[in-house]
Image (cartoon, rainbow over all chains, first blue to last red; front, side, top):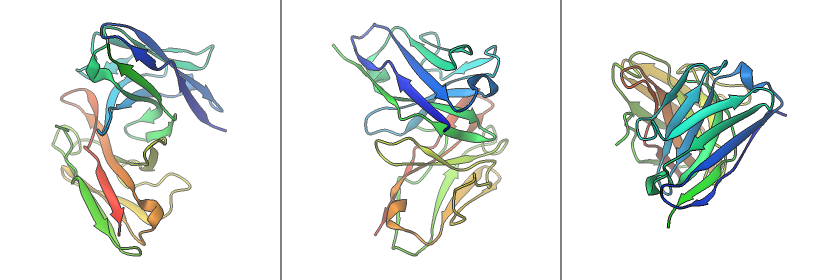
Amino acid sequence: EVQLVESGGGLVQPGGSLRLSCAASGFTLSSYWMNWVRQAPEKGLVWVSRISTDGTDTDYADSVKGRLTISRDSAKNTLYLQMNGLRAEDTAVYYCARGTWQNGLDVWGQGTTVTVSS
Amino acid sequence: QSVLTQPPSVSAAPGQKVSISCSGSSSNIGKYYVSWYQHLPGTAPKLLIYESYKRPSGIPDRFSGSKSGTSATLGITGLQAGDEADYYCGTWDFSLSVGVFGGGTKLTVL
């Protein structure tokens, strides 16, 4: 079964760090572009970042550029989001999603919750 | 403020048809494909439409997509109670070099 499972969310103080993981099963992560998407409480979906199949190309939303870093480990078939300098406005459910904007984000995880608060 | 504009809400009776619009610009919808997503609270979003009008396997033909110029539309026919959800359009914006979603539309089946 094709599946994505996120982990690593939690409560962190402003300015703190977290690393989110997204473990893939049923397919080879390195064959696909991968994305992170977030949803703040009572708000809509917001695209955060994407990484190319070989990991050499990355893009970020302006609101997270310089603070969040997307990466992948082919050996572990896992996607990561390193989150530094966290702010209250980063509080959200974070989803990893497979795909491109042409073919659609066709596989999503269930999400992991990040809460930034003192 | 989302780059793509969707109506906040739409509603219709069971069995009826509804359309959800998504308005963008020449740097996003006007230049690239649109995808549509169904999202029920607490669950993973689901891809309904890709390449503006294609349906992934398993998505019923009650769901359809179209695009004209800088706007796209999701159509849902034969509405069912289970269609109540939030719907989002999405694409790439070539000026901003970011992925963009619409603000989302809440569908209520009366």
